[in-house]
Length: 177
Image (cartoon, rainbow, N blue to C red):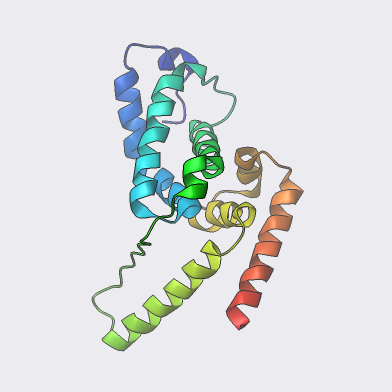
C-alpha cells in the first residue's frame, strides 16, 4: 500500500485505490477523528468527508512522504478546520458514546474495574488540549514514532517530545485529583 506512486494515483483506478485506503486505514482514521470530536456519529461523518477529500486529491500525492502520513495530514487538517467552523462552535452534541469491550473470561468485578479505569484514562486523554491529545493518540494508540508524529503534526521532533511529556504530566495531575 505504501509503495503507490503518483503515476498509480493518476490511473483510472482511483475507485480501487480509495477502496484500498478505506480498507487499510478507515478504522484508524475514524479513531483519530473521534479523538478530536468526541462523538461517534460525527466522527463517522467526518471520516467519510475525509475519504471523499482524499479521492478528489489523489492526484496531489507526490510520494514525498508515506501514503499513511499524507492521509493523516488530510485527516488532522480536516478535523482542525471543522473545529474552527461555526457549526462546531455553536451546535453541541448531546450524547457522548464510549465503547469498551472486555474479554468474556474476566469476572464481573474485574470487568467493572477495568471499564472504570479505561473510562478514567479515556476521560483524562479527552480532557487534554488538542495539541497534547493528538500526540498521545498518535504515539500510544497508533504507535507512530516521534519522527512520524512530527511530520504529521508539522512540528519539530523536540516539540513532539515536549508535548508528550506535558500531556503525561497533565494526565498524572488529573489522575491524582
